[in-house]
Amino acid sequence: MSSAKTNPRSGWSKLDSAFNTRGSESAQTSVPVLTQPPVLRSGDEKPQSQPEASTGVRFAGLTRHLTKVGLQCDNNPRERSNRMRQRLGAGKRGRMKRILRFCFVAGCGVASMLAAPEPPQKTSMEGSRANRSKATIEGLVRDMACPIQNLDGNATHLSMKCALACVKAGSPIAILTKDGDLYLPISDKMPDYSQRQRLMPFMGKYVRVNGIAFERNGTHAIVITEITEMKEVHVTLEGE
Image 1 (cartoon, one colour):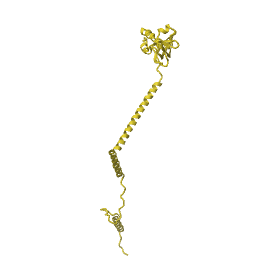
Image 2 (tube, rainbow, N blue to C red; image 1 turned 90 degrees about the vertical axis):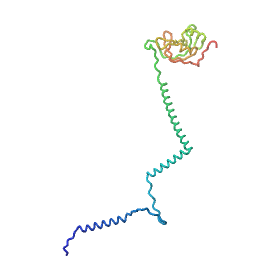
Image 3 (cartoon, rainbow, N blue to C red; image 1 turned 180 degrees about the horizontal axis):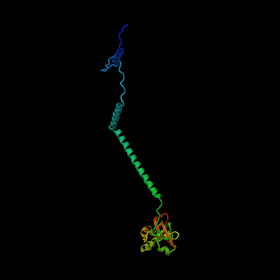
Image 4 (spheres, rainbow, N blue to C red; image 1 turned 90 degrees about the horizontal axis):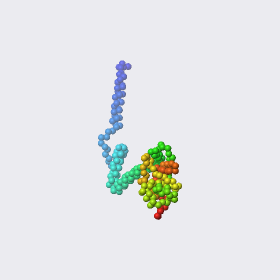
């Protein structure tokens, strides 16, 4: 037997070198490096298809296509006219909506005003003791002197010539109802002021009056808040 000692690391070193050498050879042979693109010759197979383009490339192509279509529409008079007509139609519809919205709001405001309760009718002597009431009367606007002195005078017959002469001479203007009551128009403030100018356009006409009525021992007065002619009531005038 030989007495020479063997180095245990020498065997491991040989294995490592063999493994490294083998690995480098396999790496060199398994991954070929192409420095030039392959040249196609007659009879050779066609290379495989290129990979699909990325999303960015597709988006850029779509953008160029849409731009081209838009330019074509701008160059086409009919397409340009259709686009302009669509824009004008949209503008008109918007304006119509705004007008309808304004009319609706205005109508609601008017309706609320009409539906609101009327303000209380008052006079400057509101706290005084009196026989007063809110009233609506109907009658003939005329002078006061004739019906007091002539009981045959009524609310649908009069001499217009006589009534105007009395009023121009200074006779008070009154409202004679079909029941024969005479209402003297008064103001809503003190001192009292004449209602002649307000009633002159209604001389010889049958009217409806809304207001505050007062009564004392058979004498009637009214504060006029609204007066309108009742054209459906015929008044006979002497001389017609």
